[in-house]
Length: 243
Image 1 (tube, rainbow, N blue to C red):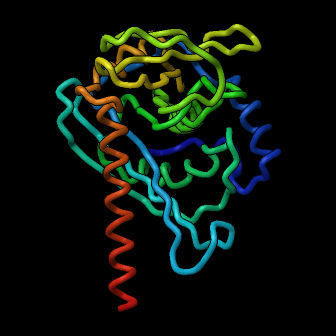
Image 2 (image 1 turned 135 degrees about the vertical axis):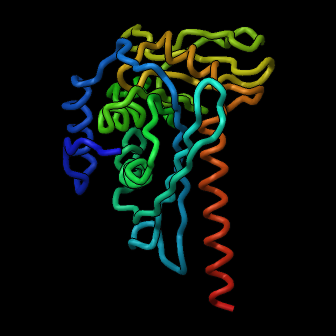
């Protein structure tokens, strides 16, 4: 997969916020979805090697992408990439910290997904441009944000039954920016919001379609397991090399 070159990555937090404001007008919040044959889940893990610190260039982002045939949800491919972290941790700007490694993983895929699930926010973001929006726009692929916690907004607790939803609303503007979705009966909800080229209604529909009885939908859950396994293997290799 090839990514669009829409901006530089060596930017300050202030410049990153302005990029979000500039690019959010390019988002498509209505459905422009191809026939979905393959879906992907993407996630990131972090590692700190040696005695370095998060600010000295010793930190790495481990990106993982899992691709499945849809709707059967049979895995067809997985890819990973490891890149230096070049952007600090700043709430609301995680895409600038994580996407360079994610793009490297996506660009190594042989099978291009028709829909991407991200472990993070989409439109439910202070500047309406979370990680799922940013990644979807760069790859020009429909994307959905599935977050484990709220960044902004409030919502009522959905009914306990799997498939129940409740509107996630920006308390300052009254705009609905996403939804709390109960993916399994009795578990905590996840927070679904649009990324790019998809409506909120379809984002919820697809999220439930790839849920398999656990709180976290399978694509991002498997991607999380994948990157953490890579991180554990690298840590074990580093310990063995020092022995």
